[in-house]
Length: 424
Image 1 (tube, one colour):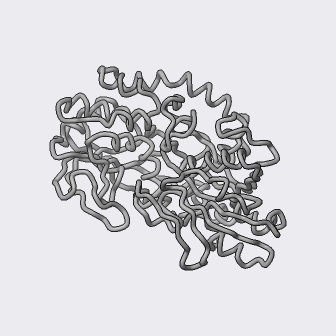
Image 2 (cartoon, helix red, strand yellow; image 1 turned 60 degrees about the vertical axis):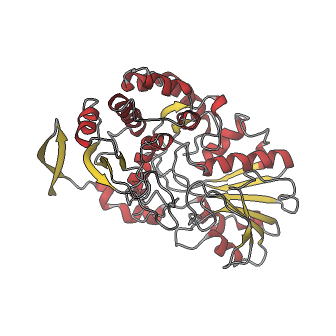
């Protein structure tokens, strides 16, 4: 047992709270959990390699496609004589994960393996007949973060669609949903707002693994009429869907340059909405999606306004920051080299924090405080939220907590569908 001191803001005053933190049995058993968890990629190499022997393979992979021992799946498979990797398909951020968000990626040759790398984040986001002409089985193995905006699942969607169209098989070695597979939250995307940042009618936080999501896409006919024998999921062993990723391991591989830790991934589910406004989401700092600000914001007023909604599980601190170019991360952030004022979001209780709810509260607070200053990229915002009604209700002054509560009915309908495809 140890005591820690936390600062909390309320009505512009600071109180010191002393909290006793008890270490429970789950903390003590983390190392054994780390040893026990076997991802689908681990099992593909150790148990099911025979399924892909003497087959022509493209691998849809990136820098997150690691085995539990830290070896990349591509490197592990290249050690087998009877495995024929023909090419690599790379998603947003590239095969090595070092390309900033939104930057188109060109085809090329990987310098380490000398394998051809075909970009699925450029002019072509979906494999063509020519790309798949000489292959037998597609392997998809990418660690996503369990949030609809993240484009890795859009790449998965198009892989399944191409497999359906060109009669190819997909093997998907499954991985954990890092922000748990037990929580769903946010608006369910409406069909007319389908885009690469919202590929299917799922909520922002969908509570499924990539394997479960693939089954959902295929069986609900969202990504083509894929026959059951064309999709095979290699399940994990010893994964508990109620656990966050750091229950199993303290290590974190940035799934993209601006998601440097698990807490950022959780917060991102709500603050990503800020990307579709003229408010900075913290790009160009070390705390993207945790810093929110602009030159015209008055931090104390924003903190006070947000506290009216009583957000749980976080502390909100007034801050100032200056977005800068960061090589390989961001080249032209909003308000580059300008002093911004705003807030920092500190996550202190994952179980209580509802990131999408907070995202609605944040956009609502900014809209009420700065109606003449804030502006929206309307199409982008609606694509992110999944429903134009969200933006319209915020701008009309509707309480964001009521907007959030009104989403529960559609979430329940989604959950009934989702439950049919859960593997764990």
